[in-house]
Length: 464
Image (cartoon, rainbow, N blue to C red; front, side):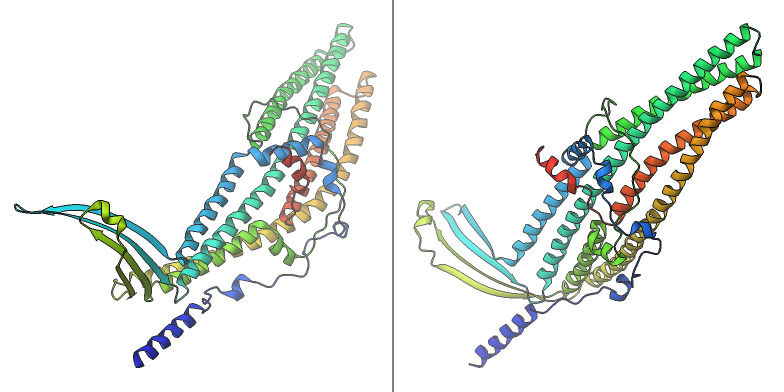
């Protein structure tokens, strides 16, 4: 009776230990810093959300983004990583179930006088009781690794769509610059022909002819360079789509001027919304569970098992037996001496946890920095664009006026060249600023944890 009572007490104790919650080794105060109530850099004009995405989401762009989400090799790799983590979770969960194995053996033994056959068939059952929650910690870490992979995959989807949009409008920008260079080259050619004709009539000097001819060759060289840049931009977009970089993709769009306005929310929302931050947090929790698992490797392990089988000298009769041979066992194993290996492994995982705490903070504050910088740049780019737009108008008028005054002898041709250069710089700046506004708005939306592939879902389904 006393033995049965002792066994019952041990069983109850083991059950209680199995239900214990694993301790956490995280520095909660450090990894959850106090966040500001609002963004430090935020203009009043950025408080209300406006449909700025509609201004850039052309049908062609949505189609290209959908193609990228289905064919981009790096994204496919991350999707496969998620599937690998799912299989790892299945492997980890299997530790909670008994393991049944079967064995079939046949042999022949003998000496100089006799020979005998030995055949056996047995089924063995082994099961480890998770008395310390060690297996639970391992499974928890594996589950969190899966959540990390899923978060990283979602962030990669968002990043890919953002990259496609940015690359798409970089191509559009290069196309508009090519058109500008073509106009500049044609104007330089016309100017050269006018000046050369005037020279033959004795109206212009040879210096003016050389200057206009030099300007034409410069513009022609710039045009060749910009066309090459356009091909490079198209190739970059084609690679994002998962295709061969042949520079054959035709893009038909205009650079829109985005209005101010994007819903920015509050900093605390970013932690819950941005996939990369979620993934970093899951990875930190996974390492915390790994520390607990490593710590519990130093504790005793309790295994239960049993087997049934039969044996016969005649292999044909082996399967006719009633499996009367059986055994059950319970075993408790505990590490006694390992030269400090298990303790060192635990300390190693704790140090890795501290490293990941710092890495999480780096990721967290880096995300806040991205938002603050993008907010500040968004307002600045809008102001720069308005000022440059006025500069462009003035430069165009000065370019026309300087050439007219040169033709009547009021200005030298160097004044004309200077005015043309200023006009070209202003026009180029207007084009580039419109593209910078688009690119920065995309990065701001991405930095705020926005989902840029929401509008691509329907189109994407058509390719699956």
